[in-house]
Amino acid sequence: MAVIPDERKALRELKLQIEKLKVLEEEDKVALEFQKFVEIPGFRKGKVPISLIKQKYKEDIKNEAIKSAIRQKIDELRSEYEIVSDVGIKDIHEADNSYEVLIEFEVIPKIELPDFTNIQVDRKIYKVSDLDVAEYIENLRKKFSEEVKVEEDREIQDDDIIIAKMEDYDKDGNLVSSEDVYIEYKKDEIDERLYRALANKKVNDIAEVKFDDGSRQVFKIQEIKVRKLPELNDEFAQINGYMDLEEMKQKIREMLEKEAKVRGEFEYETQIIDKIYEAYPFQPPSKFVINAYENIVKNMEVPKFNRKEEEKAFQEQVLSLAYKSVIRELILREVIKQKSIEVSDEEVIEYLKQRGEENPEEYIKRSKQRGQYESIIESVKMKKAFDYIKNLVRTKVIVE
Image (cartoon, rainbow, N blue to C red):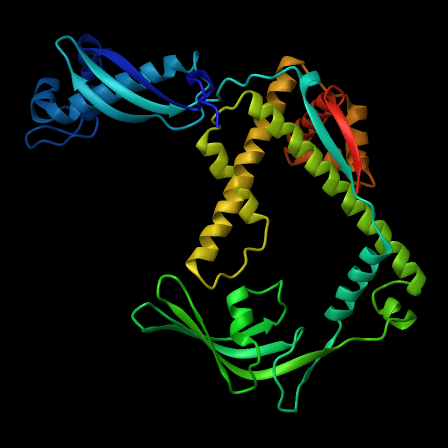
């Protein structure tokens, strides 16, 4: 990856010079604050002489005075830097007439935009086939299927459902956990090691999977089941809320076509942002990335993990999504800023209609009452900024 220049980095280090005279001024203010609550025998609360307070709490007053002087310096910096994080003090060094303070903070980095007309991207148009519709319906049938226990003494076959007792052992052979597991025996959908271990096994057999770190999993097969699928007819369609089988196929096709369009648009937009970022990479603020990560996790169903490696891989995947979402947002915000993009009431209403809101005016009214209207405005601006970019980039359409 290209080297990111300092102005396009979010994390900054800065050395401040705090004059000792300034600290002495602050000490007087801090001492007055101490006087309000300090209690010393022989004096009423609030009446302890300042000279005595300075003598008794010398170091505490000095430290608070230095912090106060630093805070004032940091406040002055906010006119020069768009600080978006807490400011950390990394080091304080006392010189002859001043204190040298090394601070660390994050800012909105400088976002540079390329000439969008020089960017070339592919735009894939995904077609929905009869096979796609049939596959969707087949999966729907599986959801309504009945699981029937296999009575005969036979080996596991593809598409079987296996009920087993899984025992986890660490590298020293100690039992870590034990639980019942439900396994759908499909070559492309379960771990290859587990698929091989279960091959040719029967009820009451034992399968074992060994890992590189010396740990292992033992599966004691308790039951083998098969799925009995419902018949594909008008009755099945009606169970799922359709008038008949033909309507079911048509509505499912329309749904898949809508999903394919969304997928194609997402990939297209992702390509554009990637190309912009490749031209002028920058370091997004970690605070923004963490917030994006937390929002993604909050709005999704987090899977159950059997191993630490699986959990780590999941976290890395979500973190990557969060990182890219922040990059996208900062780039679009820069376009909004540079092009002075504004939106009208009519554009907000049209945006809400496209989003599926049946009564945009009522939705706007409620959002204003809840203090959420500005976020809608921001979303419309983002869309408008992206539309501006799309009109400039060179696009090659590919039908798949």
